[in-house]
Image (cartoon, rainbow over all chains, first blue to last red; front, side, top):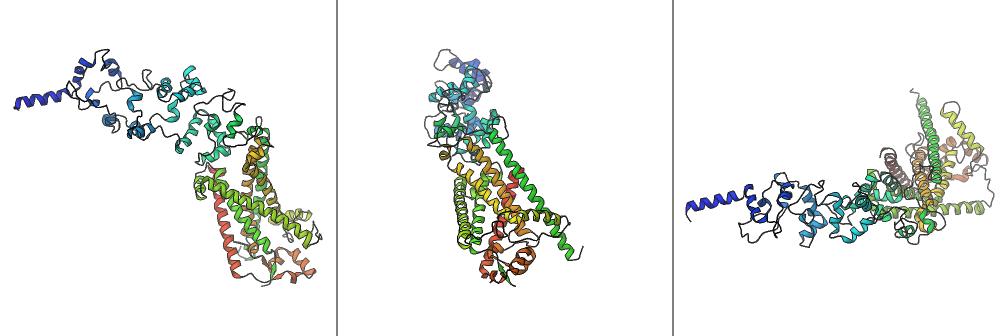
Length: 321
Length: 271
């Protein structure tokens, strides 16, 4: 091999890896309708619009390319190279999706949800992960859950009533972290997640035995979804609700086998300070509070006065003061 | 030093059983009542987690029902068989509060303010009678509400479900009253008051000195002296191990009680 040829080859390789080479890729990949078509406009406007093709498509040989390896988003996003956000990749690795993919099981990877070239910020309506598209996105694999969610109050609000703040899959399952449904830490965090929109219900729940045991860090006792349902959550006045008059007893009986109709008159979100709504509870609480205050006020006064007098007499007896 | 018998073996053993089960109930109930406090999780862990604490709570509850029944049995036995129904229900040996107790309360408050002499007390003082009946009230209130919460499905057949909300409030507040009372007022009245500090071992040994009887319960002393019964009550000192074990047990329960009291105060007012 002579020297001029070597220099030319090196120069070609160096140049070809520059951004300017992107234009060359479109010579073939810009052909609309082709199997390898890349929408240039979409790519340029995407979050990766300024990144050269071979930053992602590594070690790609000039045409004919030979074996083309799958794009590994982790080369930037796991390492945080060139300022690429890396938390999501780290969370994904430990998610049920990431762990399954790591074992070689078929499981969603980054591209499954984000797509390849047309990646936009999730606030952008063009994004495949924009809020109202989330249920359908997850539903591509989780069809049964999607079917149930769509009919739920949360699904109806988001998809039919366009209430974009209504919870989607991501809000509870956490898009990248997606923990196993049996993970206790996640379940415990979900109670306060429900509480972000339902703060009063969370507070009153925390005052009941159910809520106190949960707050102590145990997930074996009724949590929000054990009574209200999760994907199928519906208002109580909907006959299909787990809490409708038709279903309430069987919902209680899940944990309390043998429960009777009268058992279901339990206030799962009692407020002992609400006289109008819970009069008997209110007066019980009032009586107990007065009993406590009265007893302690009398006996603590009694005790302190006693201690004071007894000490004073002791000191006087010693003749010192 | 001459000794006088105040408590028999039954009383002393029962008090130890009450103390142990009471500490067990308080310690295993607190993590639920104050689940929001940072100490709750480690106290629960110390007792074997939530299920361990629940088991300790139920065992101690069963002991409580047991000693309550044993005491009722003892009182009936004492009145019917030992005393053959010759028992003055308003007399000095009865726990029933009467006019003298009201007079004693008034005189004691006068003494507190330096406006009179100490009341002349007898076998049971008014604060001892209060402690005694407080256990009846407490075991009744906490016991019944506790049974509701222990067997909700059973009681749910006869009561509306909101009875469990009522039971929760009663159980929780009455428990706070009982624990707060025992760990402050009972501890002070019996062990911490200046003439007894740091411990009155009478409940463990059963014996008090004749001097104590003369000084603290002059009416009882006079009565026994008049009836020539002092010899009948004279007794020998307990074996030293009984006294030592009693004092060690007493200090331990007071110490644990104070520790739990600190956690209760933190749970109630800080977190």
